[in-house]
Length: 299
Image (tube, rainbow, N blue to C red):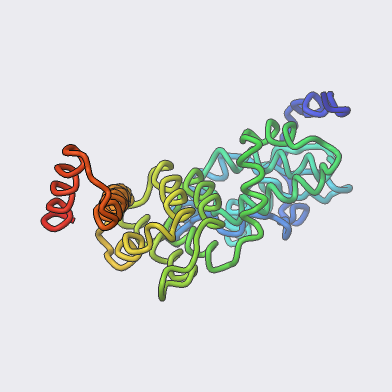
């Protein structure tokens, strides 16, 4: 049981307080973790036109920081349009002054229910919440923002990923579960012939993009194969070279190669007996002949 057992209960709904605030009283938050809302110029034009026609129907959410100064929690695009249109006032829902951690948590909740975040934006937001609540258990923080403890851990890891990987995640529009299993796969990767780990990562993202690697089980199976890469190097090499080979096909090939190794070992064992003039049983003789033929014709 956490010593902060009342932590989650401390987030009470605030009574609604609405007002049209002078534009000059409202300021954007430069620490806002969400830098890219996935908004195109066409989206911006539509919002601008809507505000010209109907006004701002969804109030900005702001937090009072001092007399006549309010920080935007949610509504940066509407605020930007209001400035562009030189509006004198903007409708706002006003929250009282709150601790930085509560502000981050409320902003995360508001924005998380709208457009999907870019991976690094979500990781940065979760990092800021973690930093503000260092003495609160990870379980309580995960419950607060509505994710599992496992995903909380992986988003912490995500923030430390190299920028190239983050850019690839964004470019290929990876889903949340794919990001998690990709981070679990990453430590298992190893160089295969001329393919460095960075080269392998690029192949993985290409296959994600082509729909050949998308299920959670695909990433898990690929991690298992790489964990015994020395046994399946030829099959992995083909998987990396051939853009059309899926993880499912790779698994089939590794299974066949495993059977092939077992057959070769069995032939070797029977051959040693034969070379040492150890009499084979009739069953072993038949098995030896059949396996040898199988190796010659099919494997």
